[in-house]
Image (cartoon, rainbow, N blue to C red; front, side, top):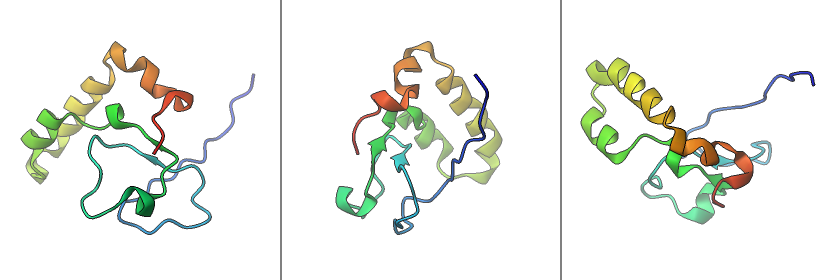
Length: 94
């Protein structure tokens, strides 16, 4: 089997969806404020891949904590209990 380049694009949840977006997956534990499910037009919601509530609260959008936030989030993602959520087929519908 040969590897093919992925075509993953990052987009803010507050950006309006476009017809060219492709498969839309929200990676966060909470729905963005002020955005309805209909406005988001999600194909899936990968809640468990977003940072934990505890980590988000600790970070508090403090730029001085960004490097440590990244390291802690990577550690959360390394949790073997997340294996099932990494499969896009098993993601919760948006």
